[in-house]
Length: 334
Image (tube, rainbow, N blue to C red; front, side):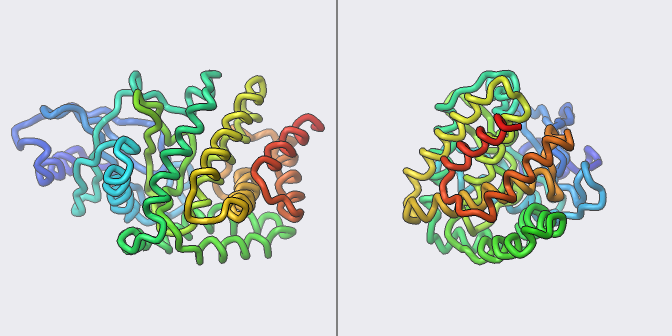
């Protein structure tokens, strides 16, 4: 755990507090890759965050701490292009590797995953999340400045492509070659700014719409990755709270339709095909890769998911709508 003195020194260097201040600290929980604190300063509450070198959930999983600098850059660019898409960035202290941003009170900015868990499901919110995401991607498509600022190939490979796809290929030899192909194709695509962790747990439902958090994986590359990532979580939620399956599937539909209809860097049919390939790969990765989803633990359900994703990855599915339709059919059959 980072000593409070180190955080205070960083806040002083960033001119966010006076040396005489004695602010209170509250450790925030929920993330597995960072230390996060709410700090009550005279200027108001702030959130201080530092990336950890190993994940709390897996001490053998070593990850680069440069993620904090990448998140700082993403926050800055996101706020410049789509105001309100992210918390307001206040400063980054390189010496202590501490990122500081505005603190958003959970009473006013509830977490989308928590809302989905409680059955407070608004498909229009899923559409709004896709809309904001695609605005940023449209604006950064082909942007040389973004490509230079987010040249994070190694980090993205280590904590996304390796942990999700290559690990899955080793666990399931039938898709090993395919996963290698997907990694090569994804790594070689340089199109727009990628957040890298667009899941409901990293989206707040603010008064003015969705707010994205935790851009530690920010990378200039294949934007279809972000859409596939969120769509995967929405379908897997059907196994988490089956009574709200129809609403989760509707969220999936609204997110997909908004994203595909508004993206301007690629033909819609080809973009849908790319998202679908990554979507199926991620469904499989969340039960067979290194980063398994925490609420699908029943071996029978895990096997169903594995069989579903493997079968359709090796088939000719090319649309996200078809993935959702086949997903519901598979659940009914099991």
